[in-house]
Length: 99
Image (cartoon, rainbow, N blue to C red):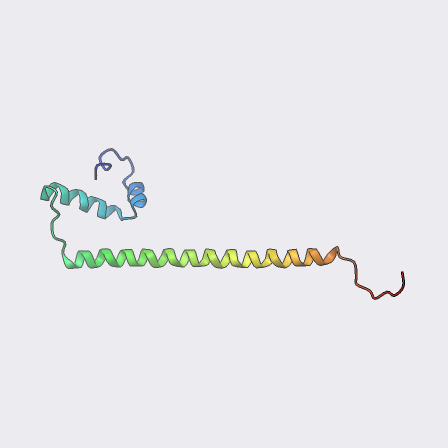
């Protein structure tokens, strides 16, 4: 809360802390009204906040899953190219007798 008055970009601060902008303002207001003692939250407010956090977490998990799938596919293509390149320069195996 000490950083809020000096912060020029509340949205950036909220992202850095991993909370919504609204939560920062709620924390600030609770500090002003309660003398450091937070006001009790309404159950619906807490439920709404938890639901928002859950949706954000699901979205981030989906993005990370897509990234992993992309990189896994890219690595498979790289490995396939490496195997093909190794086979190109090799001499054909023959069965010779003698020399």
